[in-house]
Image (tube, rainbow, N blue to C red):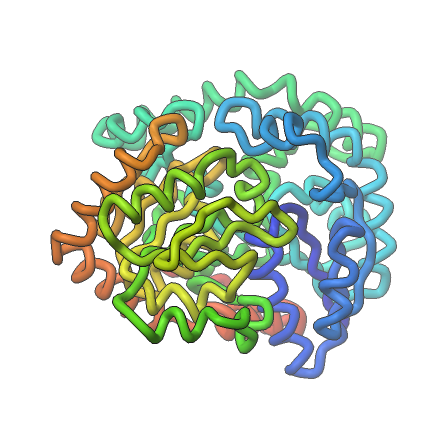
Length: 426
């Protein structure tokens, strides 16, 4: 089959799709990856075809203040949807239409708001996906909005309250989607379809690409949802930076500090404060400070600094991982079976962090409260209370029992061949 995967975002958004794309290619399918031009070299280097799809951003060229707006809890969603996605909708549609010509299946990530219009105009079979629980807007398992972390305390109010809260959010954000309504109307399609809520779910198959350790199936998920578990891709997982293996092998398990691939571009003093926290605790540490980022000035033989290392090789050898809470990083820590300290920025990160805390594997520090003292205090609790490690091992067993990539590709093949039958996974 000819299969097109389309996604937009950071490596946390790209990697699950890459995992699926590689598996489908290995099964003999013709796979094309549609995304912003910045990722062309990465996609083609792993042997997949690439098709450019708007909007196009070069993260290395984004102004620091503008990037901070993108990852900020309050300004991030409107910045990305209003300033990036909406103006690019017509071009995204044209690009996706071209990439999907004569294709059998279209697979899309979040924010591909032109997808339903392409599907309705062409009749192509469509598989939509969700990477993080908050994106499903379940009234039975409500997420924690980045603008209001305190909302977690209202979970006990039940589905009726949360369904009303979602309706309020829908009304409050209606202005963001006026360009979408016009775009749809200009194509002769229903302008009242909503790409943030019901409109983003395919009528053929919706893949839920996170583990039950992070969120279990709910009765108000899409009727054709299939939860597969995480789809892991870790770049060149067989390549470790020189010296890191030796550091990991020659002492106690270190604390690993990382901010993923996006938040790391707004690290501020995170790595310096983290190194000081490790020093307070007299613990070894690994700081993964980001590809192309300035090396933190930390002269300490107990601290190892590297731009990048494959999480799947490092996290299982850590005593604890401190990170930003993106779902890709969170999944890798859950798979490693170690405690975690989360410092969320925005988007899905507060909700992922809260879920990890509720299952007893994590603690949370607010971005503005993170410093050497607060980090050392939280890390001391995580490292001295054995229940965090015990709970992390339980979550690890759940994650490792799932076969996310294989299950997702089996379902995609069934959709493409016309043999898929919607099956409730709850």
